[in-house]
Image (cartoon, rainbow, N blue to C red; front, top):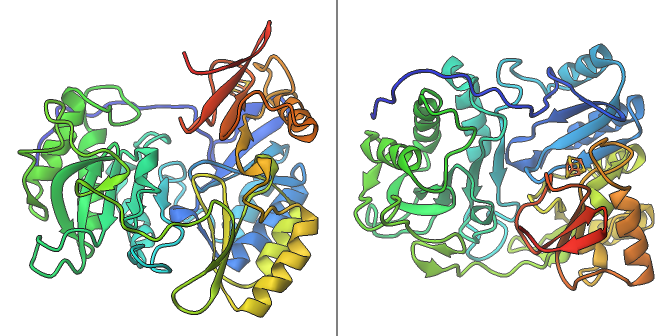
Length: 406
Ligand code: SF4
């Protein structure tokens, strides 16, 4: 394995359950759900936590959940620990793992199995990765490119290269910041590889929260992958700053062949069951809705687009879910503007904001006066929290809203 120079402090302001971030509307806590995967019991616990603190849950672009207005940190921590949602205090903020929500459910969406859970366990077993920044992101992509589009620092793409061991089964391609390195490992070894390389990154002397998209530190991470005894392949044609590798929406240099998935709506899956995909305005889930999500008693996911997935439903169950949850604010209609409009917290929750961004965006949706067509993220200042780079940015300025990125 590659040796990196020496340890460093990568302190950042990302909140966790243990470190509650002060905000204008009270404490801000963030709970991690590796792979964006939630059990029914998680929703039930979250409903109680939301009832204790402010009444709502807030979905994040990393498949995690925030609680705002925290006034009793001890009570919050008790609830979270009792629900088994704080398995390691030391690793509270570093368990940031995205995974494709439709993995294994549709053609070309290769099964990821329990990879997020295995990586989570491998992270928590290592003291040296507890110093990772809360911004460092791991990803598991099912071959559709949905996770790679968010440029995880380290990612594995499942089932895409039949040439690696002659069968292709169980082989994953390794990506750095969304780009193919040309290196591979097996599904059995990938958690070990990713944690070892993350440990190498955290020991670097460069004070970076994330792997840069290019440059010396980026290349050192690629070399650490290349030199790992459990990886194969070559970075000769891809993966370094000089030869930057394959872009996100292709897999192994080829366009993804994964079946297309609507942003929200009803999806008949290959097992004869149904997945329902839905959004809620601004990713806000009221406690009562969380309670109902838990009562469905099926696996669920939160995607980087803040889409809630309810999986393994029979047709009858799916019809019933739509009937009950649509009146509670869940949006299953792909034509709804709420599929494309997101916003930062803004006033009153964030004192940096020039305005109540969400109220302004809501008014624009209702009045049909959105300033731009398609996906858009509204922000109250140029810090642009929550902007994933998709679509347009709509920024509040003293002169009014401005569309575009600097
Ligand atoms: S973008 Fe600015 S106004 Fe919006 S939440 Fe971030 S800091 Fe606050």
